[in-house]
Image (tube, rainbow, N blue to C red; front, top):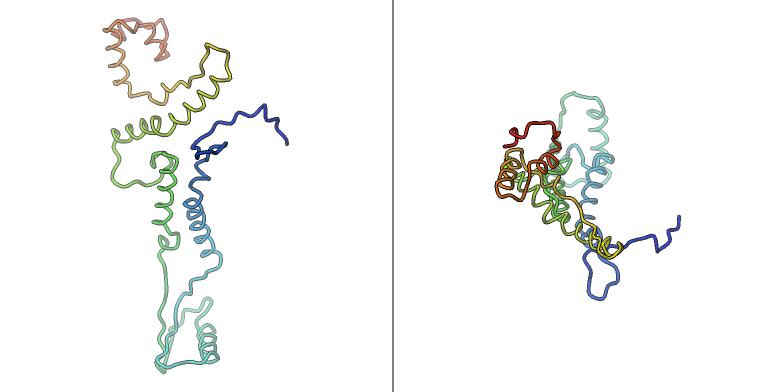
Length: 224
């Protein structure tokens, strides 16, 4: 499907000197993102291929390739599959089991670190995408994180979009995103700010009703 260039509005992000087009986050951070993808693939390949042996047979003496293969075949024949019989080894042969915990098999710590790096690239608070964060989260700092998400992540991109759309509008008109819903505080915080606005004379009760989507039939005293 071909799109007419006149129907495409290109909004540039980070721009290198002399560049006509901006650099997207994915392009700018492709190395770090590729590491996260490789980590995911490694965990999947380990599960699919079973690359990790379940144990090691150790010998006190040097073994030839044929002797090592014969020892392995004999051990697997006696104890492989569903066999649960005790192993009897001699001549300095020892069996050392190898195992990884589910956490190690899934590379949990590495994947969490990659997820944190990605949220940092896009300036998204980790808790918003269920990535474990260091330290405990309270209502206060989660609320602050949400405010920072709007201020330091969305605001830059939204400003670019507003400016781009404003240039396309007739003179005197401006495009602007309504951010009140994202910055909306708790009920007590909102009502305290409304009280300040009403007492200061720059906000009316009817305007507060509209902001709170309250019917005009509710008694005025309910908001005072």
